[in-house]
Length: 252
Length: 204
Image (cartoon, rainbow over all chains, first blue to last red; front, side):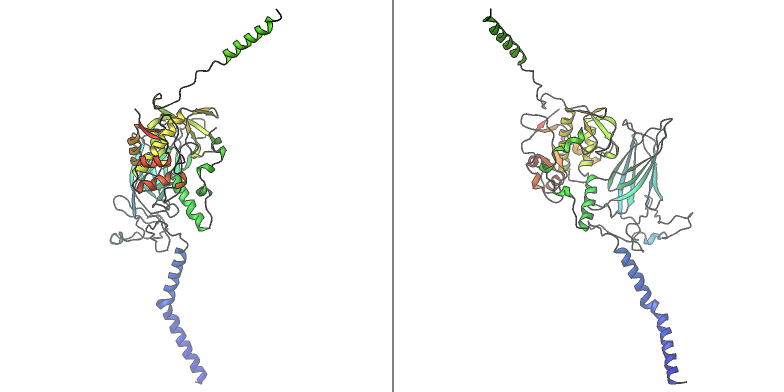
């Protein structure tokens, strides 16, 4: 065996050993960490300092429902589905699992018709961001359904206080159905819904509406994201005396 | 005869002038002393609370119920109770004034609409905190010393300060009211800052 052939075999053996060991030692883990970091940097930070827990993919605020009975649902499609992204955590790990919603709130859904009459026995269904039903119930004689719900802070809206969101579907006999998107969830949130009556001979299609997001929350959202690109809302500089003289023409 | 005619025509002219110049009986100034609080408010409902949207219908709601369904949308329900009470009184006076000055538009007659053209109203949106604030100020009015019913205007303002540009302007800052309340000011002190020429009066 020549000297050059010996050197070649030695290099090949060393190279194979390094190739086998490196994924387990450093390379694979570092790659996964880098990937997680890269994803998490895309998520806007929580501006109010609220806990910004992330799941194992580095994503923020993927909602998982914790029902009042303590049952925790993963964001998979469920037992019937063939797509399971995150397994349901074991009960011992529930308290610290990043998928457990950290905030508890009360949502009051009040249903009425255009005349102001409260709609009793309306069915309300709440859907999470993954399309799963998290809760449902019926309105009482006063047209009200109140429920306690766990939620994760939605970073888009949580500028001054942690707010979550859900989607509400409302069904009531004699009325057109309604879907209310982005219903805010807070320690105490109220979502009014006005159902239009079912009229024979009309098209009677469902109504889509936006949730009861507060004016100040909308303004804060604009301020927060405008500042990130170096612009500002002009109303921040408006003083009462600068309001145009024709500002009241809309009332006519 | 020729001399009498000009004098006669002058006299007739004077009589006609005097008759036409008789002062019209003026409407009394609406004050808290001669005007009852309204029982109801007629609210023009615009789609999605959009101030530019056409009017869908006019909803008649009780006066207190109207205020209870405006306050949580104008002030944030989680704010300091004193800020909420200042807001509740401003909302009440604005609505009271508006019921005395109804408008007709698009075939509807109404006192206010449900948008920021007037005050942001959402039926059935009251919360326990804001309902309590409305109730606590309900037997009061904040008016000039002569008791005239005038609106208390307000604007959003900005965070973390008393909003000095609004102080004494006759416009209350909503965020300013929250800041002042968190600094320990009462609702009356807050109102005094923004509306210096008004006084608190009891009404039934």
